[in-house]
Amino acid sequence: MGKSRLSVCAGDGMVSPKIPLTMHSKLTYLLSFVFAGAVSLAAADKEPPVVTPGTEGRPPSDAIVLFDGKDLSAWKSDSGAAAGWKVEHGYAEMVKGNILTREEFGAIQLHIEWASPAKVQGDGQGRGNSGVYFQGRYEIQVLDSYQNRTYFNGQAGAFYGHQPPLVNASRKPGEWQSYDIVFHPPTSAEGKTIPGSFTVFHNGVLVQDHTPVSGEATTSAQFSGVTPKGPLMLQDHGTPVRYRNIWVRKLD
Ligand code: MG
Image (cartoon, rainbow, N blue to C red; front, side, top):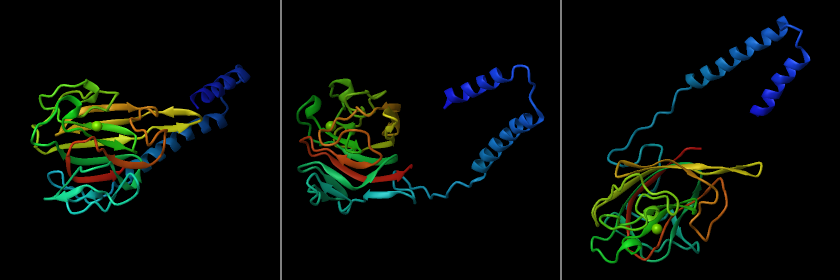
């Protein structure tokens, strides 16, 4: 678009080097500014919707609650059957298999809380491993990374396989931790992929700062390619990681 505008300007100059701007073209030029100003004023004049905020991670009034501690009815298993994870004491615990939201999402703000097992077993990737997959494709790693070293783009808060967290903000095993994540999916236009982005806070600490998400950045065998909407998925990686208080706000 920028290119064609430039060529129009060049064309104008080429065809009328000796002809000064007519009154008509001057008026058109001025009106274009007035119109652009009116459009931006109209946007600035639109009152933002009122949202009642939650407290201590609880959902704001416009959130879609995906798990409130009572049941996993918003989720399903890989096969489409009911999600088979254990629900007790206000949390869901991984038993077997990934679970996916029944609803599919594009750009979202996500709040989710998780806890790796209090009893430490294994090390590296074997310790409290799970993951939050956006559109079933792009994983923000869940791992017990408290005094537990592994490859950096595989530790807690990493965009798995792509981008390590800026810092390690992990709490101790068994303690509740939070992710607040803004995800914009990549998009596809005219055969090209325009990267999306991840911004992630781990326990309130920034760990991914507008990290690019390209169409190839999948860590899932089940899902691939660029899509406008896809499910949120929580991973079974063999350890009984717990989740609670999961909600999203749609951003598109
Ligand atoms: Mg994982």
